Length: 245
Image (cartoon, rainbow, N blue to C red):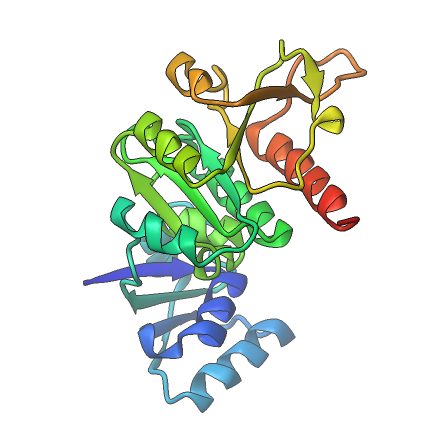
């Protein structure tokens, strides 16, 4: 099976992590900037087939995505399953997990994955249904994070949260009406951060499986943040706390 990726960061990240997955690369004819030239030279050094194509064809392949003059067909990478969770959890000393409950916008999912990678998240868990698929747009926005952070799709999110509890993972959910803020929470222990959908937040059943709920203090006139922005804020509070351990 094969899939496509596009954008300089996404192609560069795969080249660095797993160059054997490339089938062929398509470059926009006439595009000649330093970043692209450098990447093309690296691809050629790996004997990867490169073809020059016109803008109309390239635009049609990425369906409105910002391709930056490069697209590639690649072999499908490893697909993590719910059954992989126990082995992954046993391999971690102080797990930091991100759970995304019904994040359906691919740009938001990609941005969350990018923040997760930057914050050292060990894995991201999403439900199989009512969640954006790991498509080329997600990978473009994630800027290579999808090659570093396992994304695990689970059939039943509540059951998965119960499994995490069995591994002594503290589950912290986010809710605007929570009794205390993220700055008042201890995030140094093994934990999973649960972030909710763009408009509705985490579901009631998901909330019931959280050990605690936290909020982000809001000083201005807006009542909430975009889920990817909120994810970054929360994750880097975890990073701040853990840096003092």
